[in-house]
Amino acid sequence: MDALVEDFAARRPGGLEGAYALWSRLFFSVARHALADDARAEDCVHDALLRVWRAPNRFEGNRAMLKAYLVASVRNESLAMLRSQTRRDARELKAVRLVPETEIEPPSVDPVEAQRVRAALAKLPEEQRIAIERAYYGNKTHVQIAEELGIPLGTIKSRIAMAMRKLQAELALTGEGRA
Amino acid sequence: MTQHLGDEAELYPLGVLDDDAARDVERHIAGCTVCAERVTAAQHVATSLAASLPAAEPSSELGRRIGESARPRLQTVAPTRAWDLRGLAIAAVFALAFLVAGWQALALRGRVAADDLALVTVVHSHFNHVSMTPLSPKPVAAKILYARDGSWLYIIADEPAGTVHALARTTAGNTIDLGALAASGRTASLLVRPTQRVRSLSLERDGTPVAAATLVYGGTR
Image 1 (tube, rainbow over the protein chains, first blue to last red):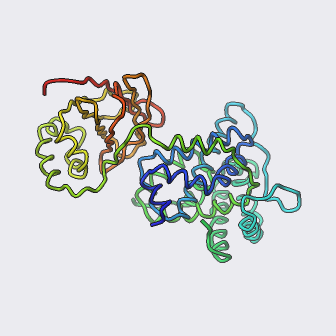
Image 2: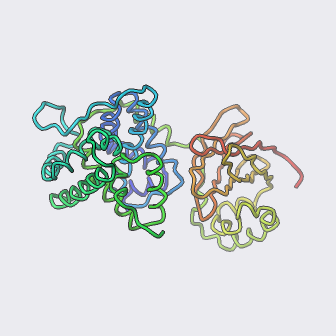
Image 3: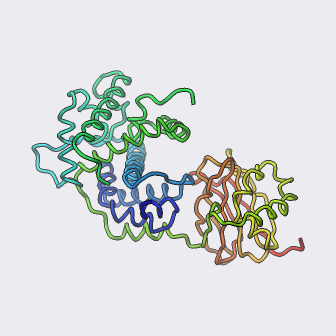
């Protein structure tokens, strides 16, 4: 078995430290995108990783699965923090940020992967692309997207899910997932 | 498991579901490999989406904090470690039988045979035991066996599914995070060899205390 995954599954500290060393930029970028604040993003990454680390369930899977699992955990933690903050402040969520195409933006976490994602998104029907961009890049819930677009909730859920399945197929066609 | 997940399997990794719906997905995939694989596949897509976000660099302090938090300050021993001590384990089952009789609520019978290391430790020690006082509207039933000399303690909880976490207060006044109890079947447990004597111990679920106990050392048994 992969030593990193083995250490993580066995809860040896090197497992968490190794995963962080490999993917810290990705974790932080995910949290930073949602929270737009460096200090809160760092707290978010710390709390998300420690929550996973201390969970009673033993991780089972390979390195790519571990990466995806940890990224999802950071994403969920950051959205929970964002929504909690939004409720407290009674403020609107931040404006939607779509995938940059023409404007000048900082480099992506992984420029090669970002290019594949942009190409895959461009192949989606417009209504599906809009739905998933608002969900992922805009940090919106499906309920918020349905309200914004004036479309039934079930329709939005279907569009996002369909977009995810198509992206999955398209990204699989254009290369293996990189851990 | 009568029905597989609908679109929620693909929505879950994006974080767009509300808390209740997300918990429903987590409960479902814990027992459904088909849907767990769908969620994993969707997580890979979400990871690709994450790679397209603007890059941001964390401070070096974050890595240090995470490393520090990951390292236990007490030596903990995984209770499920495989040791070839079956003979001693069988002897330990008999030695513990008198305790098991009083612990029906903890469903200890199905657990002891797997915890060879804990059983061997118990067999070779003089120990006390205490039932933890239930706290909160959703308490956890739990018991602690602990060496009279304070060299080890063994926590057993009737709480397999939840995230139950143990915190110790030492006689020196330090609060120490012992980590999560490891789930096994219907129960969860944790064997700890503290470097400082533990005076009291509490269990938390999602940050809420659910059980607590004070340890009294010495005794004649």
